[in-house]
Every structure is written in structure tokens, then in C-alpha cells.
Length: 316
Ligand code: GLN
Image (cartoon, rainbow, N blue to C red; front, side, top):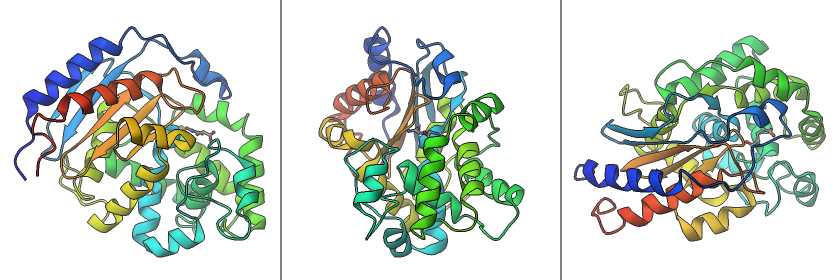
């Protein structure tokens, strides 16, 4: 593939940043109390190409909780270790059409795939429960953190304030993990799975880290910054398929209609979108829409993609 046109990317990112910066739509997540306190005007965009070049603007040093953006990365580990068919059968691959923590979605599919898919809370808690389930919780956490670290190309720490805040408000997720244990799709202790999942969501990173994580998927599972293979090209591809299907929850259809890239959002305000074989775009802006997706992030990505179409960046 020809080198990606860095000047075209810079122009598109700068234009989107300037256009979207003043947008006041959306509202910080508040069901996790500390997320409501994050300054809502924070805004950053980063792009990393598969040759490891990064362009970023805005509050690029601001660290935020990864939240649900962690889900495709743990899913990729399970795909790599258990196989895509196993994950499809045990967890599922379909959109729920319902909010990310829906119990109704679980009950509706009790006879087939109650965990729905690895990118909603049910499937993500189930996914995490299958990561090194025979080990002690501390070892299991090291494996999970190690997955995220390998994608980011550096060690990512846990924001303990976010972790505590989430842990004291996770009764709904506890119900999900218990229910799924009853349906036989959670391995080992559901409380340990819930705790590991909550820690996983509390990992903090900046927008460049997130762009690197996405660029690793764009680059067939090999981190462009470190040169290290994290998962196989097949596992990376299957992970992107999940992101395309359900990365923005019940509004993934709208997202695909407007942007058309595999992506994942989180209630911390992050979104990562991937152009396979080319680059990844990461955005950070805390105010969310009703589905839990960053308002500025979605707008900026739509603008960047629209501007880049016709620039040659998408040509193979
Ligand atoms: N930790 C959050 C939760 O479980 C993640 C949700 C999200 O980012 N959509 O509710």
C-alpha cells in the first residue's frame, strides 16, 4: 500500500478540530459519579498511521478512563486464544438494538447468546471472565492490563478514583454478571469477573495511546509504534467486524450511515475508529449523547472521513 498522505490527514484533523471545538451538545456520563466532574470542554484528536506516524491536536495530555473502548481489545485476546467461532457461539456477534447495559437484551436471547456480543456490558463481562480464569485475580488482572498495554505500546495505569466510583455504583452490572453466570456463559466467579471488568474500564490513557491501540488493529494486530505483534491478522480482522456491527451500541446504524468505519466508544468520552490497512483516528471529548457516545467525537470523525474521501487516503 502507498504511504498515507500525512498532509491530507493533518488538514482534515485541523479543520474538524476547529469546527467542532465550540460544540456544546451532550452531557458527561453521571451514573459513574466522578465522570460527571471531568471538565466537559476537554477535546483532543489523534491519528496514527500504520507506519507509526502520529498527528494530534487539542488536549492531548488529558488522561481519561477507557471504559467501553477497552472491550474490543479484550475481545481480540479471546478470539486469539479461543477462536472466532468459539467467541461467536459462546458470547455472540449481534447488535442488541438496546442500551449497552440492557437486561432485556440478555433475556430476549436467553436460549441462544444471552451475553449478546463482546462490546456490550454483558458480553464484555463474560469475555473478561474467560481471560486466564484458572489464575488468581491478581494474575488475571496482569493479563488483562497486559493486553491493553501491548495495544498502547506502554504501561497504562488504573485511575483508582474512577475504579472506586464505579465499584460503589455497579449493582446493575452485578445483576448482569449473576444472570449470565446462571446462563452458563461466565467462567469462574462472577464477582471476580465483575471486579476485573470494572478495573479494566478504569484504565486511563490519553488520545495518542488510544490512536496507537486502534492503529494496531489497522495494522493487522501488530503495534506500529513498538513493532510487536499483539494478535494475529485474523483476530484483528474479527475484532474490527465486531466494531463495525456494534461499536456504538444501539446507534451503530446511524454511525455506519454517517461514518462507515469500525469503531468503539466509551462513556469516558473516548472513541477510536479504524481504517484497516491505513490508520486509526482517536477522539476524546466527555459530553455524550443519549446512547453514551461522545458528541464531539462523532462529529469530528464524520468530518475527517468526509474530507479525506477523495484525497487518495482511502485508495489501495
Ligand atoms: N464501565 C462502564 C459500565 O460498565 C462502561 C460503559 C461504557 O463505556 N459504555 O457501565
